[in-house]
Image (cartoon, rainbow, N blue to C red):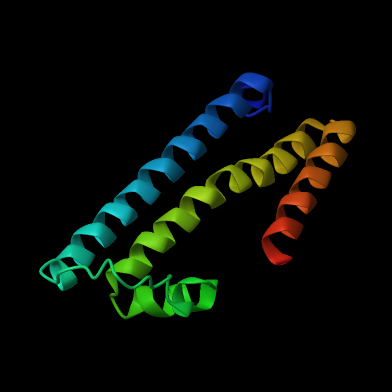
Length: 127
């Protein structure tokens, strides 16, 4: 009886995926909210200069720069990190699906999901 309880099936996989997605969205929202509050606390009183366009700083373009700013408590970096977490949430879902299909021994879906994961990772790494 206990063996059947731990067995992988579609219903259990769907429940875990829904928790994974919900948790990822909630955590990323909290991080963006913290970053937004911190950013406003740091520079909320500054008047914006709309006559000169300034793009995002180079520290917000790469993951290393974002993480350096997060550990230095820069609000904009926290917002950017929250957005990276939001994008990473469905990628984590695909990665978990590879594991779940492997546990179900559904080799066709393991192969297809690995292909999707490879395409996602390639699109993140290749600029």
